[in-house]
Each structure stands twice: as structure tokens, then as C-alpha cells.
Image (spheres, helix red, strand yellow):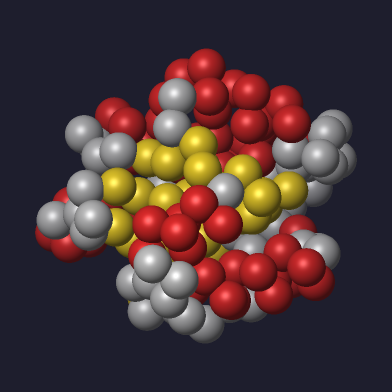
Length: 159
């Protein structure tokens, strides 16, 4: 199956746990991988004005990937979605930070673009509201159905 791994916001701003960074690195070494990094631009997304907080203006993905896309806000950019479409993949595996916000927003963007998002459930961490990510996993399952674990991905890859 032709697939790509989309790593959402595994960057210093969101203080990802080391196990998440390590496991995402491990999987990204076995699949074509792209990442989104959320940067602050108050002119684009009013984090400071509305939430009293904002991500860093400069940051980088903590996982080595084939390509990084910068975003401002929760959703994925049109450029990211177009790039994924051009890859001609059958499935987009999604992992990362903020399961019930940025990761879920990636799912909606991918789905709306006609792509097939699948959440890697053991490679995601929720927001401070639910660090387990369970809320986001449940929402993902409700909206998109498709979830998988790293072990299941590896079994599909034959390794």
C-alpha cells in the first residue's frame, strides 16, 4: 500500500514526551514522512489575542522527515494537502501532538481533500485537557473510523 506518514507538531513548543519523539523517528525511518510545524504569526492566527498564549515564532520538527510544512493555526495548509495528493498515496498515517485539536484538524483537512486519514493511536499525545489522547482517538474513530497502531503498520510492512 502506498502511504505517507504525517507528523503533526512534534516540536519543542509543545514539549513532546521523549517516547513519542523516539517512536515517531523509528517509524519515519521506514516510511515516506512529512511533518507540519506550527509557528506563531498573530496576523494569521490570533492565538495571543484570543487565548493569551501562542506557539513559538521559530521552531522545528524534532523528527527527521522528508519534507516540513509550516502552518499557522490548527489546520494543515493547502500546500501540504496538494503535496500529499501529488504523492498518489492510498492512505495518510497521522501522528503527533494535541490529538483532539491539531491532529484531529489534520484528519478533517485530509478527509475534506479526498485523502484517507488513519490515526496511529500509539503515536499521539493529547492536549493538557487529556494527555492520554483518548478523547481525540475517540473523536477520530467517530469521524474517520480508521485507526492503527505502530505494530499493525509494521506487520503490514512485513517487519
